[in-house]
Length: 300
Image (cartoon, rainbow, N blue to C red; front, side, top):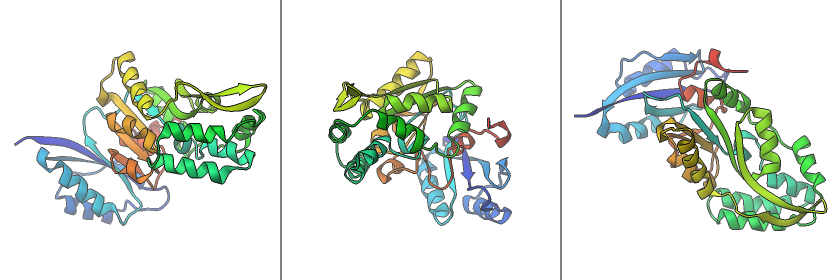
């Protein structure tokens, strides 16, 4: 009988005191383990090492998911080896930043509800991403490019933990890539603000300081994100196991499912269902805990 050495990481929101001694003891009884937890941050994040028959992996995942469902606790269950990743590849909109850039541009054009509805459908995977992007950009035709500057200065906010995530991984030798179905105007600035090494995104066509309503091809969508991940693996001489991908929308799904650790961040159901782990209650520093970083190792 083959066995698997796994690590279960539990992460709770700061200040909520969810990971009590009583809760942990009850969980250990539920999992039928005597393993002692290793605290990554007291009362906030911990690891429990498990050894199980390989055939029991999926039942164990389902068991843990059901047990934790009533609690505001995020978790990851993964092989104990090679948890610290050498590549971070991340979506930008609604992941590294809280907003969808194109929706905020549309706000300044006075058409946010119409554009946001299309965005939501695309992120749920109900319509083709490339077609949805073309349709939304066409609605912005003749908007002054000064609106882009207003968006970056006034309407975008980093997600909690974004800068700490990127800078901690970069300090520890990881390559960090921001790969977005949004636009280079924003990715370049967000990457510089957070510490990403490189970016990929779409290019808006601009003439006479106005948007033409066109995206300069090729469009970077779902397939391009997966290709970017594969290219970085080759370029950096890595394996899939060395990689961490995070995003929220359907266009991130190929990238997430192809990575060594694929995480859905406050994501659409179609993404959360297929990711290795999901962050629903905590922030992006949870990706560091999932890799076994202690809180005192965080770059803040």
